[in-house]
Each structure stands twice: as structure tokens, then as C-alpha cells.
Length: 218
Image 1 (tube, rainbow, N blue to C red):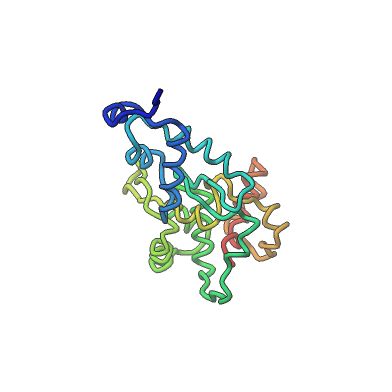
Image 2 (image 1 turned 120 degrees about the vertical axis):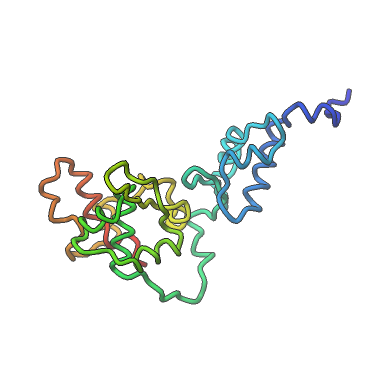
């Protein structure tokens, strides 16, 4: 007995889960950018369940050279972290963000959504338009919703590109002060917001605020 669905049946019945898994795999493999479940649903046959297919696919790639990873609210295929050295270029990119840009980016990451006034309050100095423009151009930050306060100031949040670049699933995965010191990424220079650490009632929150400045410098 032939169990292969006819063309008419395939219009109304979702493909078997192994076939859906193959479809998701093909889409992620061919996509240069992370793909959301909504995008997968729109591309796949009616009735498909890409979310379930992702669960199976992610498990199947465990321990392989390529992993299926979540980036913000989207999914992508990425090289296993322990094999990243194989993808390194021989040339060294010397371009670095200025300290002002690093601090601004760190404040947004740890305090998002953050307004320009809030960034300036934490840094203690004015934020230049060029600094924000540079981060916007890199697509590491974007405009968030306007605050429902007088003047309706715009807010800034980090982007999916930022999360993908640093291998983070969400901003909640940003390291704290202890992790930064252990990794040698934090020195003894004064950090934005550190003057208020002693007054913080939450030690973990205080560590997150203090661990901003050197997080993103290569």
C-alpha cells in the first residue's frame, strides 16, 4: 500500500515532522540572518509546526560542528563555540570603538530601554550625536519605544545583530562584574554608575551596572 500523499492531500495536510525538520534545516542553512518562527511558518506548508521542528533539529545538532542556536526571538545555525578558532582570519582588524561608544553601548545593554538623558546621567557627561550614530550604523542599537513622559523621549535598545555578534540569546545573558574580572576584561578604572554602587540594595544589580565599560572592547 502506497502511503505517499497525493498532491491534493499535501495541500491540506502538514508534512511529516522529519520532513518539516529538513525544511527548517534548509531555511536556516541558506539564510545569512537569523530566522524567526513566524518567518519559518510563512515559508513552510500550511499546518506545519516549525517550533516543534526546531526542538528536534536543535537536539540532532548537539555535539556537532554546527549548532542550532536562538538569537533573540530568532534562530540560526552557528559554528560550535569550541571550533570558532577554525574560522578566524589571519588578518587582525584594528578598528575599535571609542571609550565613549563602549560605555554608551554597555549602558544601553544593561539598562535598556534607555533614553539619552539616562545614558548621560550614568556616564556623567553629554553623549555626542556621533557616538550614537556610530552604534546605529553598526546596527548594534536601534530606536525603542518613546517614553510616555513629557517630551516623549526616544529610547535605545540593543539589536539582534548585537546579540548575534556576542553569542548571546538575550540581554539577560550579559556577564556580571565577577565574570568580567575572571575573564580579565575589567580593570580598575572608574566605571559609569560606580559612584552609586554602595547605595544599591541589590548586589547582583550593582555588579551588572559596574561591569559595563570593558565588556565589548576586543
